[in-house]
Structure formats: C-alpha cells, structure tokens
Image (tube, rainbow, N blue to C red; front, side, top):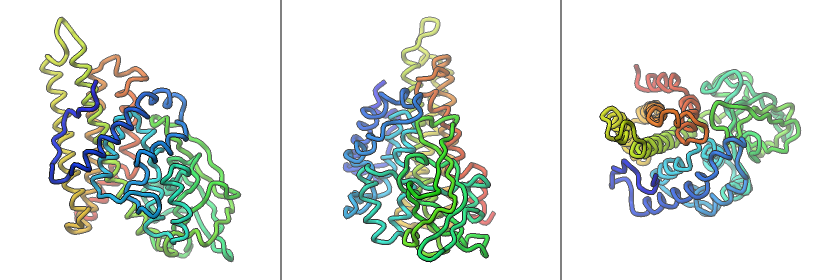
Length: 394
C-alpha cells in the first residue's frame, strides 16, 4: 500500500491552491507517521497518549482556522476539508475524533466568548496543552437541543448547574467543556438555552467513561453536574441566546464530518484495491475478477459523487452563496450522503478482504466498526433528512 498516492484524486483545481496541496502533504505525513503505526495498539488500549496533542499542534493542525493572536493559522474552508480527509490515513476515527474535539468545542468560544475567555482558553488548546470538548447531548435526547434539561440558575456571580450529558467526545480528559444549559426555566424551547464554559476541576462535576462499538481509542464519557458553581463570566455569548451558536456549530461540524467520512471511504478503497492486487484465487489476482473490479468502481463512483457535492457546497458556504435555508438543507443532505458512501465503501472493503477484513488489527475492520457512530453523531440520518425537509418546505 502506498498512501502517498490517492486512487481518486480528481480534485477541482478551482478549489485547491498549491498551498492547499502542501498542507495536504503535511497532514498526510503526520497521519502516516504519528497515528497509523499505533492505531491498532491505541484502539486495543482504549486511548492514545496525550503527547499527541502538542505534536499535532507543532505540525500546524490544531490551530487551523483560528486567529494568529491566539496561536492559530487563518485559513479557508478547504484547508479544513483537507485536514479532515487526510487524517483518515491514520486509520483511526477514534483518534481523529478526540484529537480534534476542539473543532467542535472551541468555535463557540471564538465566535461568541469574551476576549478575556478567548485569551485564557484558546492559546493553551491550540498549543495542545489543554483539551476542549463540546457537551450538548443528554440522556433524554441529542439533536433536539431546544428540549435540553440541564439547568443553570444564576446565584449572585455564579451559575449553579445541575444535569447530565452523554456521549461526549474527550469527556474524561478534557480541560474545558462548552456546555449547553437551560438558563430560562420559563422558556422550554430554544429561547431558554445558553452556553457555559465549565472547567474539569469544578466541584460537583464528575465524568464516567463509556464503552462503545467503535472509536475505541476515543475518550467518550457521561458527564454529571451536581450543584456545580460556574462563574457568570464563563457565559459564552448572551444569556438565553445560545441556540443560534449551537446551530452554527452544527453546520461546521457536519461539513467536517462529511470530509472525514470521505477520507475514510478513500482509505477503504485504497486498502481493498491493494489487497485485490496481491491476493490470488485460482491462479489470478482478485483484481482481475470482473466482479471485484466492479465493486471497486462502485466505491469510486460514490466517493467522487460525494466529493463533488461536498466541494461545491463548501465553496457556497465559504462565499455565503445562496439561500441560507437551502445551505442548511444541503449540509444535512451531504452529511447523509457522505455517511452512506462511507458505509458502502467499508462494507465492500471488508467483503473484498474476506476473512482478513474481519480480523481485528485490519484497518478496514476498524473503519467498519466506526461507520455507525458517524451515521448517528452530529445528527442521525433520520434527523438530517427531517431537517432538510423543513428547510426546503417539503
């Protein structure tokens, strides 16, 4: 296998500059050197060394899209797509998810936090010294943010927080949590939602690790808040105005997840073709069998179709081109399309590898286990279709 050469690199030159391609090489090298050799061991261990964060920061991966004043590197949306795609060559969605949990935990701080909060939190996170996480989902529901039950009651110069969150990426070892809470009990909808920055050492804040089908290397936890006193200065944005911030965050997350799914689908195609060329049956390589070649082409068709959809939509998002409701609908549809592409490619790759594809330690086996979390996390397929329908007036 030679991951330095993508099998389907039909990228539109109108979207990618030489700088994008240089960055692609940087991310690919990091994934192949720093993640891929350890992916199986980290998966079996249920985690990866915290030292990977500062190494990623030194490679210029963590600060992407953040202002230089906080230690970041300004960029466009296609740099983020490149980052998500190329990290897939590390072969572990669990590592990618936890290593990059700040991509969903920190944007609300950047977009709506006070300057003092930004100066205190962002430089350490972008340097890999601290870890940022997002805490939205609750045991009673996930995508229906307006119905969340975790409460935050103002008491003097502190909020008193009570409630639970679940399925939180980096939930055990994160230092900073961007938490959605209900600050207006009289408003049981979107108007009563706020965002708070809650730190890991807050008294009454406990975390419990969760076991999962896939993403074994990702730290995933249930959070409990019992009379946690959080400084009022840790409010992110305006009181009772957190819902729009969360929705904006979701849009960015879904584009990021789509790019990551596309990257892992490409990995599956790569590994399937590599195996088909090496494996012989009845005196010929598998790649000479028409049925196998057709499977590989079917994978490539879905990958390239998804790539075209994603890149066109990313350009329109970057340039705010089009009706905002249509963009939200298409981001939802892209999330569904990209995950179905990943599901198909992972399934076909395991089938082509046969018994070896079922063995732990094989990259496509790991990706296959990780498909479902991608189809659920960030908004399930059913929720995404319903959201798209509402935005389009169906």
